[in-house]
Amino acid sequence: MTKIGILLIFSTFAAADPIYTVVGLGVGPGSSTGYAVNSAGTVAGAVQSASGSQQAFVSGPEGAAILSPASSESYAYGINNAGTAVGIVYLDGQAYGTIWNGSQPTQLGAGSYATAINNEGEVAGGNGQAFIEANGQIQELATAPGIGWSAAYGINDSGTVVGDGQLSNGTFRGIVWSPDGGMVVLGTWGGTSSQATAVSDGGEVVGFASLANGYQHAFSMLDAMMIDLGTLGLSSYAYGVNDSGEVVGYSYLDNGQQQAFLYDDGTMFNLNSLLPTDSGWDLMAAYGINDAGQITGVGLYDGQLTAFLLTDPPPPTMNPSAVPEPSQLWILVAAAAAMALARIRRARYS
Image 1 (cartoon, helix red, strand yellow):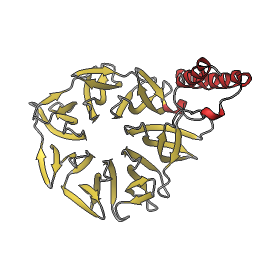
Image 2: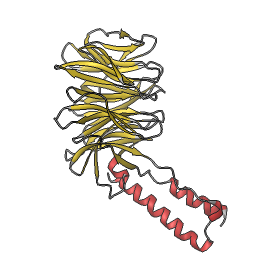
Image 3: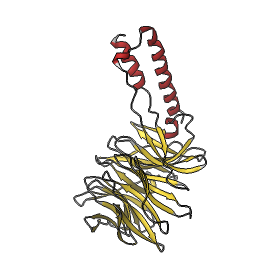
Image 4: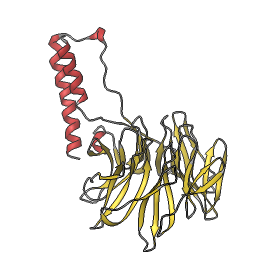
C-alpha cells in the first residue's frame, strides 16, 4: 500500500465527528444526575434514594459511593482532581455548604452552599454573598454597586470566580471576579438577565443571557467579549467548559424538547446525534466536561432519568504489520467514508 493510500484512510476517519460511548451511572434505585467530572472520570452528582430524598454521590472507575446518610437531603455539584467533592446538605430544612474529603465532611455554616472546587482546594459558593473558602477561611467576594444577593458557581485553578448577582429590580447579572480583586458585571443579549456558570483554567467563561424576546442563549466569553453560541431551536444554557474550549449544556428544540449539547469549533451539536443510533439514550442536559472531553449530565434511559458519562474513544489505529492488500484498500476507504458521512449527517440534522 502507498503512503497516499494510508493517509487517505486516516484523513477520512479524521473528517468524522466523534461518536461517544455512553455509560449510565446507576448509583441508586431512583433518578440520578451528574453535575461535574474530574480528570480521572469521577463524577459528582445526586441520586434519588428509596425514600425519595436526593443523596450526593461520587462515581468513578472503582464504583459509586453515597456521601451522606439517607436521613438528609444532599447534592454534590463539584469535584476536583484529588477527588474532593463539594455541594449542599440539608438538615432540618437548612442548607449547609459541604466539603467531602475522605470520610469526614466539613460544613461551611448554616444558610450556605458550595458549588465548585478547584485543584488548589479553593471552594466557590454563597451564603447570600458570593464567597471563596480556602484552608478553613471564608472570604466574601466584592459586591458591585446596585447588586445585593450574589452567588458563585465556578472557580478555576487561578482563582477566577464566576456567578451572578441580583439587582434591586429583581433581575440578575452574571459576574466575573478576578484573583486581584477586580470584578466585571456581564450584560445581556437585549434582555433582562444573565448568569455565568463555569470558567476554564484558560479564563473562558460560559453561561447564558436573555434576549429581548425572553429567550435565553448560551454564551462563552474570552478577553471580555461575549459570544452567542446559538441554540438547537429555542433557548440554550451553558454549564461546563474545558481548556480546549468545548462547551456543554442544554437547549430546547423548536418543539420544546430539551436536549444536551456540545459546542465545539463554532458549531452546536445535539449530543444525541453523536451517540450510536441504538444506544437507547435520550440525553437531556450536560453539566460538566473535563479536559479529556468526558461529559456528564442526565438523560432518559429505559424510562428513568439517569446520570451518564460520555467518553470520546480514540480514533482507530492501524498495525503496520497488518497492512491490507491493495485490493482491500477500496473496502476500507468506503467503510471509513460511510462512517464519516453518517456522523456528519447526524450532526447536521440534529
